[in-house]
Length: 161
Image 1 (cartoon, rainbow, N blue to C red):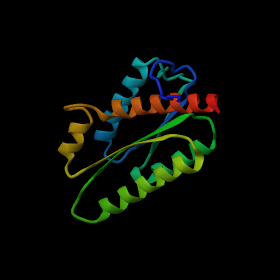
Image 2 (tube, rainbow, N blue to C red):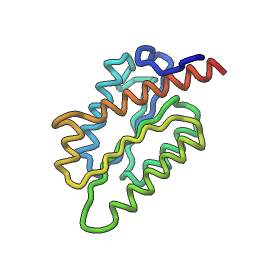
Image 3 (tube, rainbow, N blue to C red):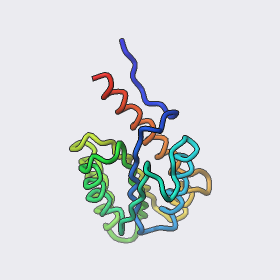
């Protein structure tokens, strides 16, 4: 029996794309900062001149899947991270946006075999979103760890096969 799992130590082979929704940027900027901090602390070059990382901004969470799809199909990235924040309002718009964003992001990952980390917060209030983006903890860090693990795991699976 073989046990295959991702590791967080060898990031030299990884090229990561981070797609960030500008809508609710008070939250998404904090998620991005947590994400970049984690990637940097695990050895990924996150400098402005980095060849390992691209950050792409889109208008909102609804646009995350189409840009993730374009990046995944380019075969330039081993893993993608999508960051967004959809906060419930008084209309059903919340349900439509998060439904389409989540289905679209999942489809990109399935259709391209490129791991796409789902880093879209879905909260009832801005306060809840801010708590998840840095007041108590920063889920951007968690999404980055997931990306490192999946990038490493996919490499291991490709090597095994």
